[in-house]
Length: 448
Image 1 (cartoon, one colour):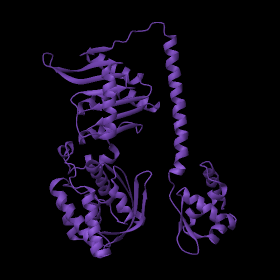
Image 2 (cartoon, rainbow, N blue to C red):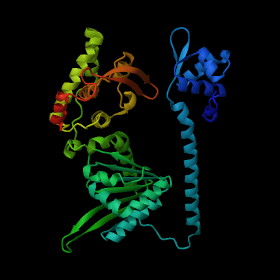
Image 3 (cartoon, rainbow, N blue to C red):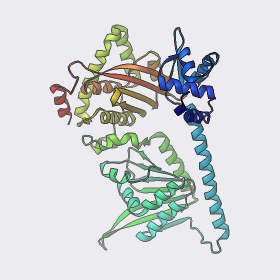
Image 4 (cartoon, one colour):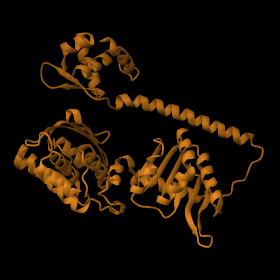
């Protein structure tokens, strides 16, 4: 083992790997596919120990032992077996920090000489009192804050509670904002700390809700005072009531069933060619994965590998159809286009599709997770190289527009995590080695 790898090998032992496993894994990651003899020489692990070590690493999904003789193996990217110990430590630290917060609250409560009785219901139309109540509710949270906002509510929170909200998030309070974000909301949302989770929902509430620990609730909105020719913020406050219990259950259900990761949705929301109205009540994809599975299965049975070009043509036509209904603007780079495709996949099918494009070596890695039906697993087992979905066809159409052909490098389905990983090697389509030809430029122009 080379000297520069020793600190890294020692670090890997903190993840539960033995010294031999660390050295073998690092050698495969550094030098690529190797046989037993090369692994022994590069890792300095005894030859008799190498194969048992490889089998152990294979169980941890860190190594793939290739079929055939002589035996060869290759290193795989780090998986949950390495990240899990970090998550456990982070959870321990979070629990310890919360304990400190709770102890401080107990101390403050015990030492207070003048307790102010909390009202179960409280209402005001005074703007200063409303803002104070909102900020006090945020500051009093010890575990979790959920905000369900419309555009007006986001503006109120940003102008009056930005600092306090970011502050509690930094103190390990789980802060979540549920919002039907539009293009005008993006500048504000981008200002909030990365510690605050933003979830995209497909409706905009009439009133804004702030729920702290499931026990304290603020309902607020902006009112126009016609006589005074001004506006104010009206707030209703509830604590420890049935209303809080009911809304806690409703919000948790909404978060789990309908709210979507805003990081995946942002490329779609920010795309100039997609209107905010088209995202408010999107038509759910009526054609299920079953249809696309049987379509691809039929084509494979009839044409074999020759049907790949047929799928590409179908993808191109699907993309051209979308420009008439949803996407009027195609991003200028393949990376941006893939990010937009991730948003569409999540919005219309509830599937998280994460594309990573390594442009220097022309490799795309696609990870699919979330609401995957059994047909995704069957498609993976059959060796299909795109998901059984309209968005799989659109993916091929995008590659064609940007002048690429794709061949599958990896096809792996993790049943335990319901995750499908596909990796593609891109090559330039003949005649498109340098730039998109005139025809492709015309198509992109039409899409804009």
